[in-house]
Image 1: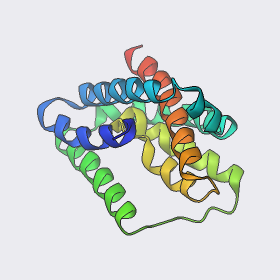
Image 2 (image 1 turned 60 degrees about the vertical axis):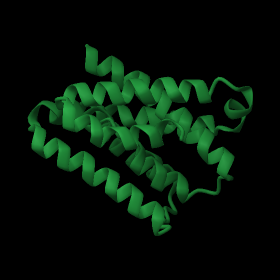
Image 3 (image 1 turned 180 degrees about the vertical axis):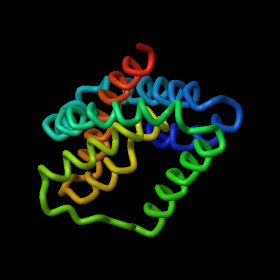
Length: 165
């Protein structure tokens, strides 16, 4: 299981034991370390579409401000429901082969990146809108994996810095 799958699995479990800010920070740290390892190979770095990963990351920064505003306002019960719902939505969408067709590549980057930023610092789960966006593009499975890994790694580094400041 790669970083985003691992974090998606661990997020709901961690939310039972820890308060929301700790869960978000632990999820981001684990995902960033795991994906940093995945990206340590030149093959994965070569396969990643760095323009798309960078575009998504830049567009996620404004969303992080919204997420930083939301995080302290979510009580623990609401946080658990949100994290559990995102996890369930992800699992069901993958199980049923759900795909969103996004004809406008640039608009897709902006919207998915922004939502990824909101989810990243408010739940620790930035991947869902990115997965849906990248699934609508014409990536091979290896390019898809490398590109999402690049985004989640870059987003994780920025999100961690935003949360600890």
